[in-house]
Length: 487
Image (cartoon, rainbow, N blue to C red; front, side):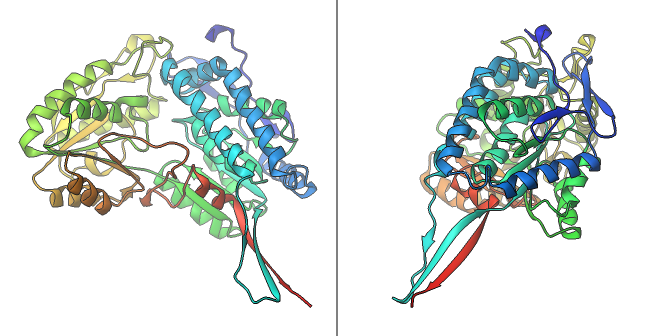
């Protein structure tokens, strides 16, 4: 099936695919085997200007911004249906482009993308304005208005899902959108543009600009006619985007950034084997290229040796394999630079004095692909770089603790605050620890839960944004107060 794919690699602007204005392209290399998939349009400032102009004209025309919410809903639901209809194609593009296992792409990424768009569409005509409490001869109306032109810059680890979390609420609220996918995984975003057009989204309302962050990404961030910038990615890039927003038009900026999430295992966890299985998944799923990865495993000292043994056993089901094999659970690292980063951190962990107890090696080199074993370090403390810096790979740091207070201190001793988990049978401990953790999502006796009904986002340098749920609509709307004095 992969061999039969037709790869679209052009930008999509104002309802049509086109090459970058400068004529430049960049190679799209598959981490599965190191081979070039295609050459992709490398957009820059000129393309950003074209896309923003098309998006602004579409917004001002009202063809989408003033369309009844129920009609926007119907089109977006059709968009979700088309994503499901093309599920195998989109899953293959995702796997070939960034290396994730095809089984995960087909059973996870595709339905999650469609679900995000469908849920958001279903909600939009059920969001109401407000009436202020006024004197009897006055009426104060508070309404939500679309912002205008939204630029969405999304990462390479979950290209479709992260895009859907941005574009669904932005489109549903009536905005025009420019999607800038990562240069490491642009193919599904480019393909989604044609499906959006087929669903009935008008020309200019949804645009896709592949290219590099320092060219087209920077162009969008500095553009004076972009009203809102949304981003998921590293904390360093998020900081730079805030600067660009301030240097330009003070556009609203919503940022989902890095994480170094603590997964806290108390000795009275209801099922240590289950906790170990989920801890293994929390670091090995998607090759550890997950912002919420449970990369710091805090284990009560009395069960630490036992639990490390359970982790090692659980990781036997997370062996790297060919991403197009439906049985594979751990795929390829997205590119050589990321693989080198992971290998470097494994070396740093050893040099800092941590004990390597599992993995740590590059494997399957004869395939031409980029694979590394899930890796576990014991004897780690928060002063070590492997515990404090985001690696974005399958590298787990095990840290011991003796009391709940110590666990809270260790967990919160981080610049990040994206997610956390607590495993205990004691509801008092669960409540006390969860409330004390400085994280946007806290899971009790499981890891990585929640659905579209709950907001997703972090504290501290994990960013200020909130994706999913009705709260996402706040990112893409302005509140307008209209005051009427009766004669």
